[in-house]
Length: 397
Image (cartoon, rainbow, N blue to C red; front, side, top):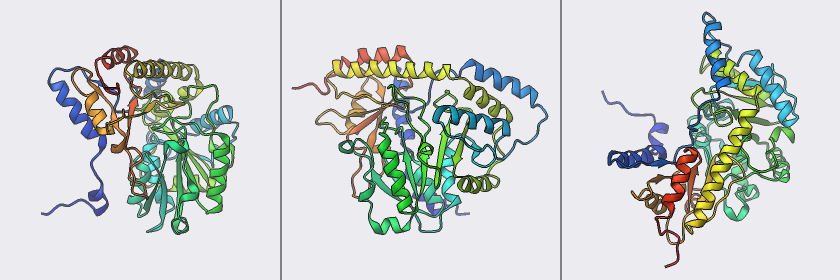
């Protein structure tokens, strides 16, 4: 029997993280201790209060059966309360919130709620792969707009051709931005929302990093500026170090949330009871989030100082768990990443061109940058600073 993947699946390229893992494992096979900044998976333990809530719920829900497709009302109420405290946005737990299995599945599946064959989804690059893979699997066509340093990594939406906009249905935006770490000014939210409404676009806002910021100004939510045609995707993965729990939600325009709920009933059977109990505990506590912000901020400051000491290009981030560092003069991002894997340094970072799609103008906006995920321990970051002094990259000859 001849078994072939579907045309959409077969057209997908390799996953960049798999290639990085292969290179790291080669070094580890040689007995070299690699410090891995490649994958954005927090290594700190999930806070104890969250773990205890999950443990207790395993027992209390021992005979509970299937959970709600769209999340227990207790969790949806907690999400509504958190949104009101954090953003001043009042949401209906019944009509404007649906619980998801993290944000990845929600981001991937959302285009299935709206797209007709051949319609366009506007996608930032660099950006989260499910923005475009979900569009393709739903029969849509992604159009990639670049996030460039000369524009502060904000999109030039007015540069999107009118012919593309006539076929477009969804506009994906992600701020605080992964991987660039940018937090936009309020004017951006106003302008982007006006653009979406002018062109009859659903504005899908990925706000998974809204709680990991390093300045005095907390990032905003698009829902603070309008709800009609807006749907927000949130996650506890990074905020509360719950990547393995798969806990998130969508919220916003009740019509969009209703469509998403209808889709979800055909895809999964809801988030496990004990995960939802853990999510409630996480949302009720802000102390661990403040601590995580301080920890990531300290690691960012230590790495930034190490770059300067090693005469490497400087880099700071306003938010997220990433640093988007320019490669040193004379090196491509891939060459720089490979140089950092040399045994004397043995630090794994992600080349920007590997996690960016080619934009409509033919350029790869990730080229020339590498992404450092601030997930290693403070001790490993200190060791990285020592190792970076051993290299000559970026130093004048």
